[in-house]
Image 1 (spheres, rainbow, N blue to C red):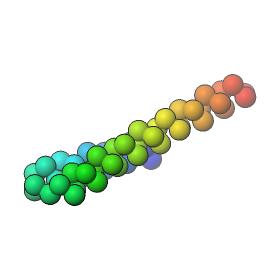
Image 2 (image 1 turned 90 degrees about the horizontal axis):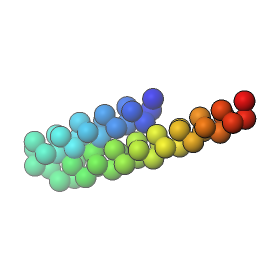
Image 3 (image 1 turned 120 degrees about the vertical axis):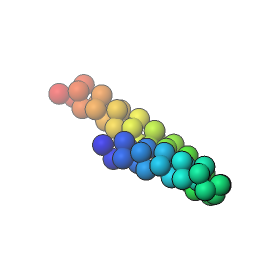
Image 4 (image 1 turned 90 degrees about the vertical axis):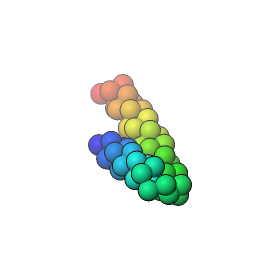
Length: 54
């Protein structure tokens, strides 16, 4: 769930950077989206390991 929130936050920040022409906001937004993808992948791995243990 945190990954999804971070992804939404990143998309919003990237969009604001696009609208305002601020490359820093745009880059930060993309970085947050990448972080969200990594978090999501980690969450998926944890779920798979938990399923195999149970």
